[in-house]
Length: 166
Ligand SMILES: CC(C)(COP(=O)(O)OP(=O)(O)OC[C@H]1O[C@@H](n2cnc3c(N)ncnc32)[C@H](O)[C@@H]1OP(=O)(O)O)[C@@H](O)C(=O)NCCC(=O)NCCS
Image 1 (cartoon, rainbow, N blue to C red):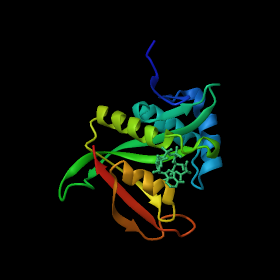
Image 2: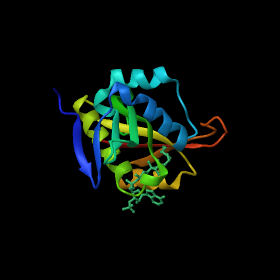
Image 3: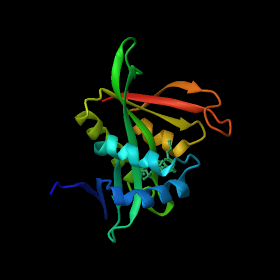
Image 4: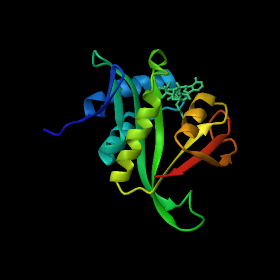
């Protein structure tokens, strides 16, 4: 059987998401973020890109966080011209009681490894301009803001488009 475990982060373990994890992932999404998706959206992302859909579990096997990405092909965000295969971080969240333990960083790092395996040369994401913790995390990971999308979110908030090469 394929090993789904990637690395330990303190008392947590990072591993690939399994179909049976989706209800718990959705519960974390509802607890941590205002952006939600249909169950089938999560299932499709997992089928399409299992290398970049990861979870963090605690010692008891309960999920503490997840990251879900999409592999896309389109105009490069990091080069002046041309097309690129890009890993889009669609959603990442860690339950409040498990934050500041390095999980957000580790989930992003490991999903970027998965993107590389899928042939991506760059990665990008959108983040609310008010979401300081996430913006600091992404900056630490080498992401830079390359544009601001005005009124990107349903409630009218702007998004920073952040990107980096892989
Ligand atoms: C953003 C989020 C995923 C970060 O997860 P996390 O596991 O707490 O992050 P980490 O512990 O890996 O933090 C890595 C670094 O990011 C920065 N950071 C994270 N949270 C921070 C905070 N609240 N304030 C300031 N800096 C913060 C720090 O530099 C931190 O390193 P340090 O703890 O050594 O100082 C988490 O806060 C979260 O789930 N937020 C709600 C959902 C969300 O906003 N997702 C992102 C949408 S784009």
